[in-house]
Length: 298
Image 1 (cartoon, rainbow, N blue to C red):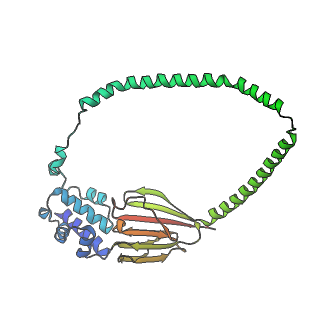
Image 2: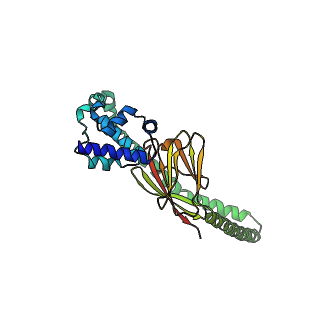
Image 3: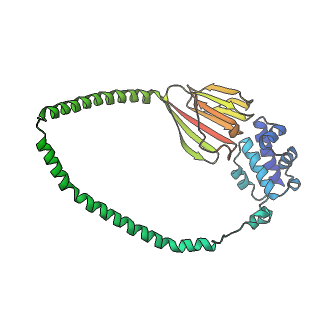
């Protein structure tokens, strides 16, 4: 009972530190308030089953910013374990193996013979093409000689003109390539780079460089809870962002931004008006911790 009380107190303290009421937590996790109270009081007998106890505690931890795996490990002697009999009955009814229909098995048996026939036909066609090509050069050369003998004008001037045109075209292409490279170099210098450098669990880290500004904007598509800190752990914003509203913070003079998101699937992050693409699917992991490391361009 001592560990259960300690677990409940730890969860409750984390919730209050986030400034969340039980009603707020119910809205974030979709867990009924009475079950949240049961978790804080260690009253697991009121839960639908042991599987739901662990699932509810995991969602609770993610909503208040705690590592659920660490919590389960620390309190493993008290948190109920999940037994196989509590898994949905449907899992035991899944057909483990499908048989191949008789008609399909005949096709499978004939497949090697069909492939062998295709290879033989292909080899015959290849040999015919090679033999046909080898017999053409002599006749083509004879036709070319006769045509050259019939032509009575001097081709040297035409050849020289074509060579001069080729030289002029090459010079024009070099000029265009040089101009394009210069334009590309200017674009590379002015275009910022925002790329993910690591992903682990619900945590993802990005690197922002090749720019001298860092303006962060977090936009809501629902009512997500968001907490924003700088690299030194200073809290710059915490709360729920209403639908279609945004929270903007200038991190130009900071080295790092840390965004804690309660509902990632309802949240969009923009860095200097460039939309950040989640490296972790927001529909699979609702609660995410996004860190953006900023290296200012010199």
